[in-house]
Image (cartoon, rainbow, N blue to C red):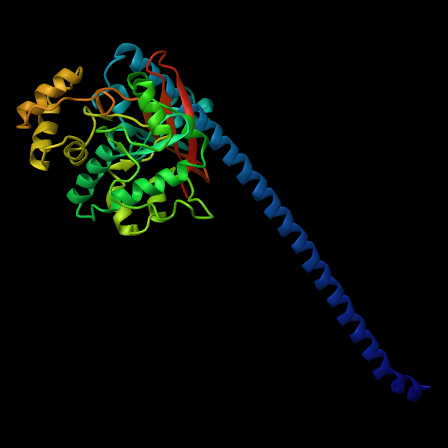
Length: 370
């Protein structure tokens, strides 16, 4: 009997070892499955939290935008005919805790916005050269290139050390993009009202205005007029990268001085930098523009007449100012805002249009920065 028991003990030991190993494998597999389920659950919870924080940051950004629009409307109510850098709208908001910004009192309410910060600024979009001005619409559906604006853009390119011939190429590219857009039917009331019907008919038939600033051929043939694919409509300064001849470095050099707005606009002489002023005022050099800006820092211009006197004081010969090209008020503003709400961040740029008559504001577009 003793010999039989001893002969069976190794087999029994092996079975027990296999059973233990199997049990350990089952436990390990169960642990892996459970940890995987917990990890996926944690990821899902984290994703939901991020979506919640981002949604809250977007609502905070929307509230800040509404408050900014109220500032623009209030500023227009007090100074309806002038927009200058010393206005309330021109004061940027440094990084500020939301609870401090709202003036919340008490430990409980203060904790609600303790990890939320906002900052931003308002930029006068008409302080820059509007590339949309390169193409005019004297009649609905008729797109003509503005030779005077091309000359201004050429001067701006030359001041920045860029090739001036790119101005004509840019105008043709913008016109080709607008040809497929509904905005080609927008016209300026001043232009339409002052243009005789016979001239309008001539333009519609493809003729020029006979001595005006509009021309379909400013010295550069439009070789792509019959191209099967029309270029995209220019909506930002980055659209210049689609224009042959522009490099990323050239676009970055131009960015502080040019913009693309939905309609043609005048340059605000109260806010424009010296480079833009020297470009849009014929016969003015950069040093004279800098003297003009230095004089503007002491007192802003109340009307176009003040601008005329300041130009003469800066040494510019007597020029007639067209209110459609040079003005002292603004309709388009760019609002730059940044919201930091715990882990969520929202960097947003919004173009606002302010009606010059009712002073109401409308959102033209909203773009989030990458």
